[in-house]
Length: 389
Image (cartoon, rainbow, N blue to C red):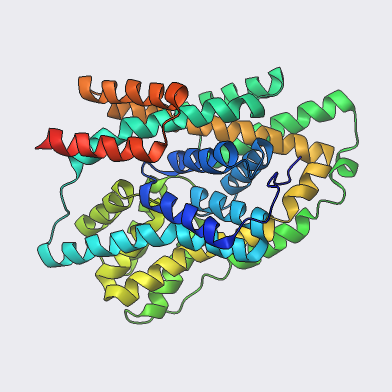
């Protein structure tokens, strides 16, 4: 079942407000963003089933670009079609893009970043608690058989061992699909019949090829196409994004210094919303507000295109037993990657009594008291600010 369970037509205005809120408070990177979306759309409003949400998470994990933003775009598309797709994506991006532009303006003026270490240090334990809550809620639905639970564990081990996220998802999906195939004894080609995958890949490949830009002086057009290229091919974390940015803007175009690049990625990490708003910061450094706009549009546009192509295929995939089994494997693999992120974030963030206390309090507040995660983030930020002083 991959249909939304909302009983009425979701107002676009309400959808916009929710994603504006998420874009304003969603600290912690993609795993935390996805956890907050699960809280808003699955548990609180019951607009989407857990199964539908997990399918969207799995699909977003398999396409280039900012995965949490693409999950939001998938949600908007499933609830309100094309208008929802545009509203969800843009409203999730805008708050972070505006904030990053303001920080970039201060950076250009003063030559350094605002000091926010204390606030970020206190917020990270809340983010970990939010991810744990989402893993608990979604994992019970995703790991519906012992085989899928085992595949999820293997996926986590492989990621811990250093295997890249995309390869982990491929292995998880293939393992689930092969298990189904052996159990049912079905014909592989027949089981995939009617999905329309060749059509999807031909369109996705065409979109990914729209990346060429001629060598020209610094301009908005070149800036836009540079980020369009990066948004069309980058899989993985902000550290993978860093490698592409260094190659393009430091080594090739010589538009940034190494320090400016590192500061750009740091801003994308400690501000709420998509990590890919690093592009907004770089765009501002290169071309002011117009540069920030074109850089942001360039890096996020491929995500909208990929979701528009792939969204209608998810119900077709679910109707194919073998393809559905593969998707089940990708779903548990995606949750395994989230668990690894939570562990890695926790290992580097829970370093003293204060951060441990915030984590424990947040877990109790989320699981027992059912406190809204936004209030926990706000409270932790205040505690971190006071503690820093």
